[in-house]
Length: 193
Image 1 (cartoon, rainbow, N blue to C red):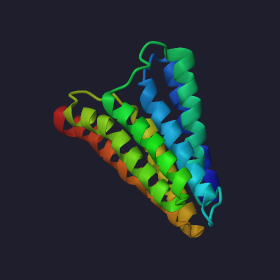
Image 2: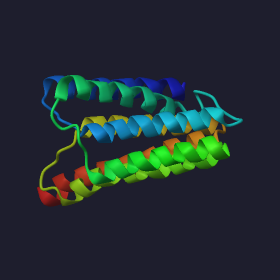
Image 3: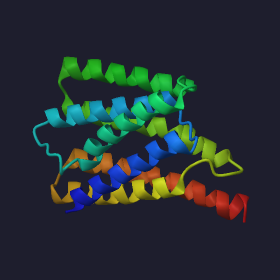
């Protein structure tokens, strides 16, 4: 049941993002979403190659792969313009490629998966940094709240399945999304009380 709730929340989150890009003029950086799509896809690929794997056990990773792909395509289709990202995005893409090479040579699924989680942590840093310095909110609070609930239910599902890599993926998401929500709230409470 928790996996179905997490999947539903991810689909809603993706739909809101696509609508925001198409109709509300939101212009996310293409390479950031491309990075999330590549990293989540590689993460799921390395996860699926491990001995213990299930869609329910790592529903967050499975849904991120799908939703990030759809969002990436929507940016290409509707946003135009800003297809070049920050240097940190480029470094994360290079790191993802190197992890893929490492994984293909060494066949260490768990290590490659955890390294990809570190790449995804780094990918959040520009958003976290922007929100720390922001004088106004530039993020969609409802989308981040949905992401938080999705991570909670994905973590529950991974825990029920006793899926270590699934818990790491969902736990990483839960911590980082919590930080983003806290930073958004901080703008409302501290910057604009």
